[in-house]
Length: 141
Image (cartoon, rainbow, N blue to C red):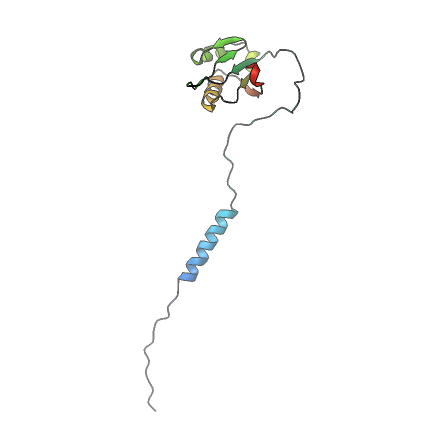
């Protein structure tokens, strides 16, 4: 008998299932990975209820009213004196050391974040150690 000589073919490897497995592993690790939290501002909120002391705080208190329609900046009152954004840094820098211990910001609900963040930047430039936020009834601003 005559042997039939066959051509030897190179074995082929189908890559499709391998690629599917790699993509499934990639998706699994992306979903299972915990990302590092973005550093931000640490906020310590007071407990709910009435204020504990009725005495006037010795710190700087900045009240910001809701902006009027058509404007982006609310009226600011620093310790019972109306003040503009231009004079705010010099007012912070001229405060006593005891007042520079903490700035309390009271704002209305419609005050833009841009104004509050600008005030916080000015406070940090004036070496104010802490910044606190207080809630205010709508009609008292």
